[in-house]
Image (cartoon, rainbow, N blue to C red; front, side):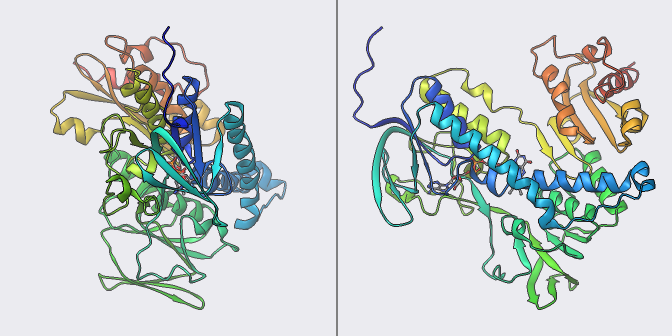
Length: 470
Ligand SMILES: Cc1cc2nc3c(=O)[nH]c(=O)nc-3n(C[C@H](O)[C@H](O)[C@H](O)COP(=O)(O)OP(=O)(O)OC[C@H]3O[C@@H](n4cnc5c(N)ncnc54)[C@H](O)[C@@H]3O)c2cc1C
């Protein structure tokens, strides 16, 4: 084999950011023998995902869930158990998980001999990055290819005073030092709905203000309706189609003035409306790249930007803005750099996992999309309340819904809400991703499932749908 020609650059790949997008790219490239370096401006490894997004929010959610579960268990109640923990107490568990995650991820870079340059990266030219530490010392490094995986941050409108102690965004809410009695969440996207569910489960009065007309409207309608129903059933007040006029912080709370004339006063206010890509300090003008008004970068199906040796992955390119997707996009970009033809397959059909109450997950098409495309599909449902496992665990709220082609029986979409929906979805995904004729509803009808399990929902839903055919 011919020796690789001596490169004029120090590295084959420089990755900016150590979140899931950056990690996916760095690990994939190094495993293929590429010389890789990463740059991270935060003092810790793991990205927003580990430190102020996915991990802390999911750890807090789990701690709240455990407390609520203990308090609502009749056996524990009879024994006099009543756990009343504050948000700061519940958050303590998250710190331990964050530390474990960080150690693990740092180990990946160390074991693979990837140097971590500590400081903020900015472009000097398409192959040169300048890394500047907080103290001001700067160093230049060069590479053949650069992957931008700098993530995103909450968008902050200039007319809202985020220095007010009762006004938060999804980053600062993690430093909340008390449990509020009432909260207004403005913005009903994934982050808004997740925090709304958590605070409601803590017993806080909840106002969820949605700028759109349906919660999480990218989901299947039945799932959106279920989320609205169960949030309302728990006492949440949801207002759709509203826009803020002014957010007024006062000593004992925050008043949200809506353009419709309504006013809502609560203890604290959480802004969860939009995110901005972290591109503003990258000096992208030096390489001729211009982010859009949300700070996001456009990429092609190889995750390459308009500059062919510069790639962008993760939240900095916008939706789906999920850690799971960011990691696969990072791997896909690295595979393209390496010249692997499998790369395009990697970041397709990304499932959604939404950790609301009830939990939601879906993959593939929804009924709206299939109807618009004139696909002859049929539906199969399984209600969790009819499953023995759900009855035993007392987690009866939920449903699995399979959408399949009525002629080929191929699965077209899987939609689920209820306990462990984000785990359950992957059983169906494994079948849906099979090439024809193996992607078939018949798999669930002809397979023996453990009993009692939640997985059994697949057999129930498949039979329910199959019996509709004529
Ligand atoms: C509250 C919340 C909950 C979420 N929950 C989930 C969930 O349950 N499941 C899920 O899949 N996703 C979830 N997400 C989304 C997920 O966190 C993001 O999609 C994911 O972190 C994106 O990864 P990334 O690598 O693109 O960016 P990030 O994880 O944000 O990492 C970017 C890194 O780049 C660094 N950086 C930025 N600029 C520079 C620079 N100039 N120089 C050097 N370094 C730089 C940053 O310091 C950071 O470490 C959640 C997000 C939020 C906010």
